[in-house]
Image 1 (cartoon, rainbow, N blue to C red):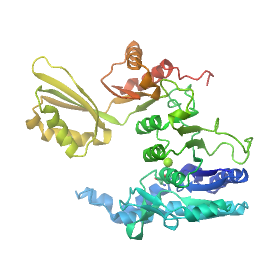
Image 2 (image 1 turned 135 degrees about the horizontal axis):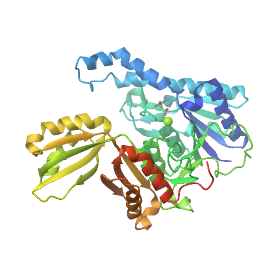
Image 3 (image 1 turned 60 degrees about the vertical axis):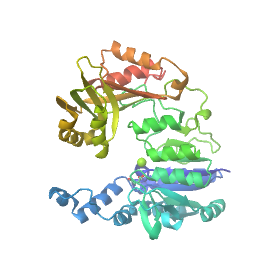
Image 4 (image 1 turned 30 degrees about the vertical axis):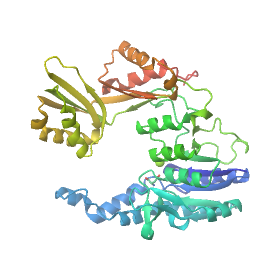
Length: 434
Ligand code: ASP
Ligand code: MG
């Protein structure tokens, strides 16, 4: 008998029919003899609606239109009191549905466990989870249905963990309970080598390492909240991403199944026997490019450019600086698309100090990345990648690398071609025709 954490996302508990379907998954694991702690999200769309109400109550939009400081937010404690309620509803409903199926179950709000957090309301961090009581009940055969996304802050105020936070609730609970696995049931059946909408021959990975998953997540493959992956890596929690729409009940699945074929296991790289050099190709369209033309090529200029951006809390991702011939140089870098206007504003104000000739911003760019822990022990991956792109006539505007990732910045019009090219180049196309 194993202890499992099962987490159901918003689309998997979107209505009562889906909650019944989720309950069948739980029942199957219970009947296989496992102790089950279940973490639920709010019904899909519910949290957005609750956030909308909070903003309306505060007159948020009017305040912004009147030029009030947008950072002067409504009270985070009351925001948390409202938006945490979506999970309260689904945890109670799933407990009732389980009971109706004859499965012993009890719902748990964050404060009842208690799951303690710091006081950073709206994006609180988990400090600790008291699992004694839960453990006793789980061992006694009762399913614990835990409201995800919420906890209890100092001064006994309800807190929430940031959007998408029930993934983190599930992983944290998995760590505290020393669960065999944390199964994340969602609306996709795993993590793919790339977006199957772009490359129909993309295939599901059986396993992916924590580090690769972090790179994938930060690049836009948003299956898991990034913080949950960091936590899983730190605490060694094995996470299985699987679809709640496959095999409810027994549906042909023997109760003593392994994990192979059920989804994608996010785990330590030692657990991955057959490791490709590149595991996946990610792409992101949410960055923007900033170019400063003809700045003086002398010490201190880069600091004058990036200092004010950092003070304005604008993150810079890729940076390229050209060599100069005449004492001037061009500098190109990327920021989040949503920060572009602010970045340009900051740089305009600093024009006299920096002393550039012209300033340009563009959102017509895409970042395409090859990711794989196998790169650590393989030379020449970058060279292969650049020549394959060159053969297709794709111009590279900037490059950045880490030990397990190579990213290139290209014209947005070529994003799909680049993804397809790299997917075949690194042997990721599945053998079966889609
Ligand atoms: N319901 C919350 C959200 O929509 C938490 C979650 O679903 O993970 O962000
Ligand atoms: Mg989610």
